[in-house]
Image 1 (cartoon, rainbow, N blue to C red):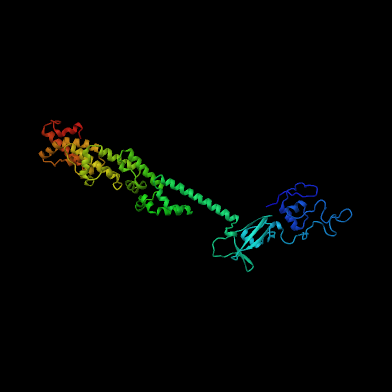
Image 2 (image 1 turned 90 degrees about the vertical axis):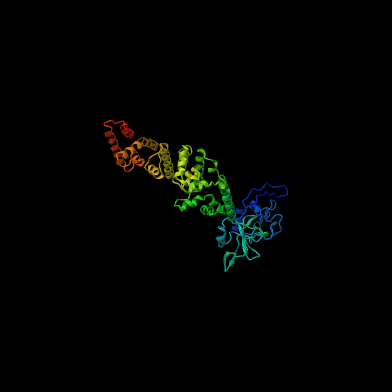
Length: 467
């Protein structure tokens, strides 16, 4: 460190004023180059300075004889005082130091030697060498890097031991090494923070257990892509996002964790709003709801889910009990199961579910008029777009004309006019034109038999707009 202490000189008459502060590095360079030094610069370097009574070193008094100084020898001048460029190293740098920059060959390890006042090379017991530099009088530092001189060249020291030790076994590190360690510590802190944030985010959904086993991966600095791969390979992750595997097998893309959980939340909201039993949407370990897995694997949207629920509730569960009974009669596979669960199962297409319910509604409409409708005819009508309400109106018409039309077909030995014939005509199925002609022919025969008493026959109701 620079010497900035104040010097007090005894000149026999008291104390001299405080000397000004001097830059010792400039003074040292002047000394090395042989330039004359001021008294203050000499003091800063610890060199002797002539007192006022003595006069300048080597000067003569008025009589030509140096005052107070033996003849030929300047009083107060120590033996060995440097004249011109001093031999050896000034004491201000410490023993063993060589003034000036260190050898240029060592710059490959330690960078530029600019500003270095002196240096010395330390030889360690293991044969390695280290560089110690003086950056100011009384101040030096030793680099931790070890090297050796081989075949006249400086090379990194090869040792089987780990680490480079300085005096007393303490690791000596350069500024670059310390900066690297500081950056590493900062990076570790950032990775720890990233882990904390990730854990907090997953733990909101009860998924903290997915992240905990991978803490070492996060804090060790693996790349985000590698961490994602490792995470998705764990058993816990596969269990939590089980539907993704089924989606991939069926040709669908896997959902991201955010998309997956968002869809689950949407399912839960729809079911709660529609009043489904809690068992349909309550979640268990790690937030898993097994029923959701089928919906996710089947790529069912929350809109379609609501459509399924409404279909089952409004058209079956909350409707005429006969519809549920007929539905189970037509489709025995539903008889022992929950109709709502059946409607929610993605394996059962929503259109197929609606068609089956419509078929049951058609069967109930026929039964309400004292008629019967088998599964085949009901599904045929449902496929043709006949709704339950249209079926009610149609079977009312059929019930009005069928009995008399059947009697007339027997009386006049015409082809039989059955319920099937009437359904074909009324609902506009294939062959409806022929069925209509058959009914009109029976009407005409009835009119002729009653000699113009048209309107009195039951089948003549078509003139009143029944058919």
